[in-house]
Amino acid sequence: MIVINKEKCIRCGSCVRDCIIKILKSGEDGMPYLPDKLERCCLNCQHCLAVCPTGALTCNGVSAAQCEPLRPLPRPEDMLSLLRQRRSVRKYKNESLPPEILEKLKESLAWTPTGCNAHSLMFRVVETKEEMTFYREETNRMIMKLVNTGIMRWIYPAINRFLEAIQNGEDVIYRGAPHMIVAAVPKKAPCAEADPWIALSYFDLLLQSYGLGSCWCGFAVHAFKWNKTLKKQLGFPKGYKIAAVLLFGKPDVTYHRATAPENFKILT
Ligand SMILES: Cc1cc2nc3c(=O)[nH]c(=O)nc-3n(C[C@H](O)[C@H](O)[C@H](O)COP(=O)(O)O)c2cc1C
Image 1 (spheres, rainbow, N blue to C red):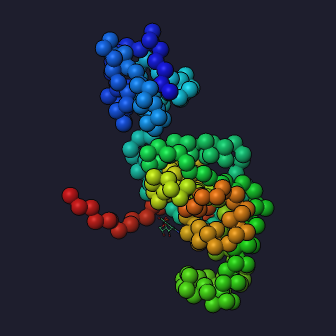
Image 2 (tube, rainbow, N blue to C red):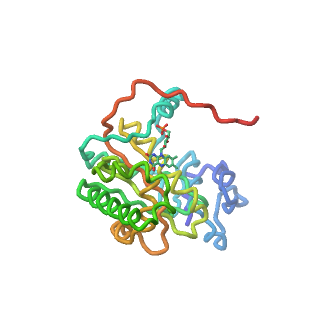
Image 3 (cartoon, rainbow, N blue to C red):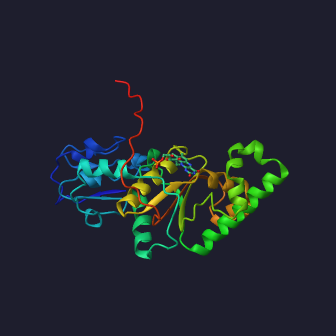
């Protein structure tokens, strides 16, 4: 529901022009309104709320007073350094992050864009070392079982490279990370393939700005799909598909420069 404070509204039409699905209309007096029959089409993107210069709009119960004021953004050169200096970290300090940092990181997830603004993603942040140990032990147990039955050769031929390390007790899957975030999505979400990866990529950039390290964990995604014990522990509801896993924590490795990667082909 969109509520307009008629005293604050200056009838500039910004909200009508920026309504992404064009359901906000302008009345004869220039006052915006949302026809009742179009209300169910509202995506709750809150663009009308964000674009209103006088904060006259309340969008589905959220008023301008509840939104953060604008603050200066990082400069382009700072953003570029962040992109250049991000590395996949495969060695972590054996330390959990302070709860207040974990809270800030979790809070940031709300701002990820999702297809059709579906907002149906669900996340699981593993916060304790004990729980990470559970995932490590269960995943390694599963790998050894799959290797012994010969199935692994078919599912993940590359695991051979890691077998000796796993047998020696090295954590080649979770890399000793103290935390991970798992993104799951309803199978029928409009952009189920893209949303989880975008969300964790945004999360990743915030991690970098805190000086933290991260690494995508493709194998964990597979492990969570195959292993009922692991899947159950994560606790996602039925109908949700586990899509992406990002390990994170304080890095125990120092990089002294950015890399100089090969350029992608960019067609113009
Ligand atoms: C979709 C995706 C899956 C990945 N899966 C893994 C993984 O399972 N284990 C791992 O160590 N690194 C994984 N990586 C990290 C890549 O290997 C890494 O990004 C690449 O080597 C470049 O290094 P950089 O991230 O430090 O620039 C993954 C990266 C992406 C984008």
